[in-house]
Image 1 (cartoon, rainbow, N blue to C red):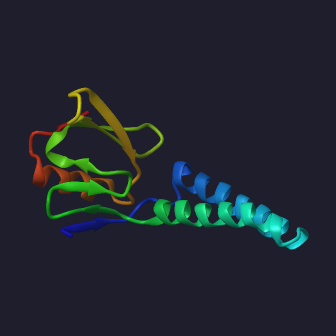
Image 2 (cartoon, rainbow, N blue to C red; image 1 turned 180 degrees about the vertical axis):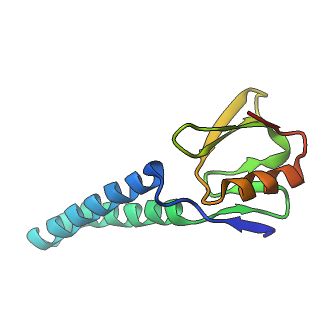
Length: 130
């Protein structure tokens, strides 16, 4: 692992998901308390999935040794063509998909955007900034 970059958990896109997860977890706990043992399987499964998704939202972005960016799926950094800054915070990475050659995009919300961009530019200096 080359570098870890913290997510901006106060960004509305990530923070909003945390509020949704906490609400669903609260719903699951209420349902678990008020039902019999047979009906507890579904809410318990929902709680496990929600904890897993919450964990994924809070894990920092990582640049691996094989030049891949993880934390919001896996993106190969040499395939990134350009980076755009969003108006309300966050960055959009445009890259070429390996399987069909189409341009795709993913949104990232790093805590330190400049460190995030500099790290990507060290690996792929051909990235255009918009």
